[in-house]
Amino acid sequence: MDTQALGQFYKDKLLNEVEPFWFPRSADKVNGGIYHCYDADGTLVDTDKNVWAQGRMAWMLLTCYNSIEQRPYWKEIAESALTFLEEKCVDPADGRMYFHVAADGTPIRKRRYAYSECFAAIAWAAHYGATGSAHSAERARHWFDIFADIFFTPGKMAPKTTGKRPGENLGCRMIMLVTAQEMRKYLGDADGFYTAWIDRCIKDLQTLFLHEDIKAVLENVAPDGSIIDHFDERTQNPGHAIEGAWFILEEARYRGAETHKDLIDTACKMIDWSLERGWDPKFGGLLYYTDVFGGPVQEYWHNMKFWWPHDEALIGTCLAYVMTGDEKYAEWHERIREWSFSHLQDPEHGEWFGYCERDGSPANGLKGSMWKSFFHHPRALWNCAHYFGAIPEPTTHH
Image (cartoon, rainbow, N blue to C red; front, side, top):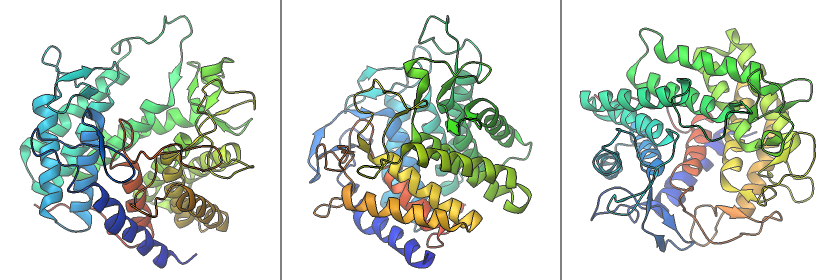
């Protein structure tokens, strides 16, 4: 594997195709914040804003600012999103963030969980890295604390079900893991606060959600980690598991690969099992959902090919290869890269389509939606370029 050439490939895609598709067109100069619902040619198809997306896109812009080049407009657009978040996206009744707002910030929907808050936290942390602003550090800690409180204080989050079938969820552990990593990166960790959160989440992944006996990563399990034999709990999301895996690989890289081979082993199992279960043997690409026992999945989009699992698989196999040198990850990386760029890539207008049919044909022209924004795909390009040596670590500029 020519890692130097691949690193440059990903950096070029990020800076010459993906970033120009989004900016400056997505900056809302009237209301502040960032638009993100675009058709194939860059036509804005919805002016509503996902609150997650404001934090995610601000973080991505500031990550580029802190590592590639201090382009003023990256920082300006990110700051517009951060201001929009604080002024328009917080419910004054309880201090929690909305999930979906209109262009001017009129609230449309609020959800029980606190992912809007965690993405705001990492965006403010990256802004602290760019500016040294004490206000930014305070906002980052504020939103992190709310996120942690809602998800990890028993009984704090409004229940989704009756409670008669209790369970534990993979997603909040994964997001806490990577959120704590970003907080530590920019705010430091003198008392081990963020590392303790990371350790807790990795332990939960290892003990509750990884099932060695059947080589599977579960999304939802019983409180003791056992399988709940019903549709929702049998459903696996291979891309999600691979995403969690590379978060763990990053932690091993941060701490030192030689002394944390247990983390590498855990992450590589998650990648191996997920590729084995999720790669479509007929058409290639990653299936969105599979059943842990090989049975039917009830979600009707289960066999579609979404953009983000392929982005996560690119990062996961890239980092697994860098950390282990195992050629199987080089082979998998190239297989995923070839499939992704031949099916998801738009050769005319740049960027990736978000949604493909099982055979890899685009389901529609959406490049941005209430779920797809300037986040998963540029994050994958940035990380692959970074791990292959073409982009340095983010640094603070204060």
